[in-house]
Amino acid sequence: MKIIGLTGQTGAGKSTVCKTLEKNGYFHIDADKVYWSLLSAGSPLLQSLKNAFGDDILFPDGMLNKKVLAKKAFSSPQNTELLSKITHPSVIGEINRIIKSKETENYSGILIDAIGLFESGANEICDFTVAIVAPNDIRLKRIVKRDNISEADALLRINAQKDEKFFKENADFVLRNYPPYNIDDEIKRIFKI
Image (cartoon, rainbow, N blue to C red; front, side):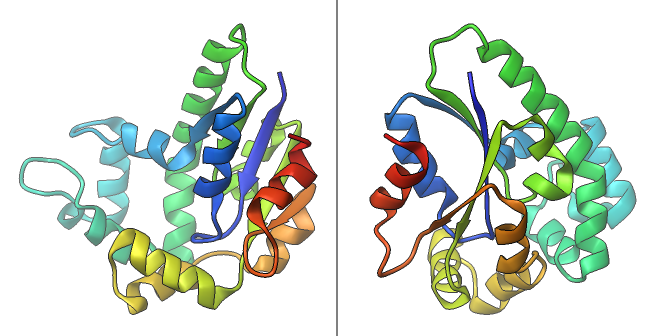
């Protein structure tokens, strides 16, 4: 079974591509969901984040305050790198566990949907990688709508990530998710479905 890494900047449309591929028999692993699943109150990963970013990233009940962590983590390239350094090993370990549990099932392939696919080293477990790209202005509108945040907060996320050139240079295939390109045609072109 092929393991395909899907990546691209936030708001480029990875979720849209994954939904289409799921309908065509692919199993979807969302690295963000894996990450959030590892952050229960008192978890080792949450403790490491608290040690790095401060007690105020937690609510009084010990649960993560996502907005406070995001503001701190995306406030500088150094903080974004620190977040990645802490979280990537745990997330990749859990992704490998999920892949192993799906090996005997009858899927067309397994999708690893991860913004930090290359930065985390998760691309090493993939048979091939696909970068989904879209211009910054389109991505900004998508992020504001999707996450219900301000343009300023969305820009912090955009500016904290690698530029489009990075994704194009590192991925095996590039999928364009913006006019005049048709997303379904782009998916068919790459995945032959």
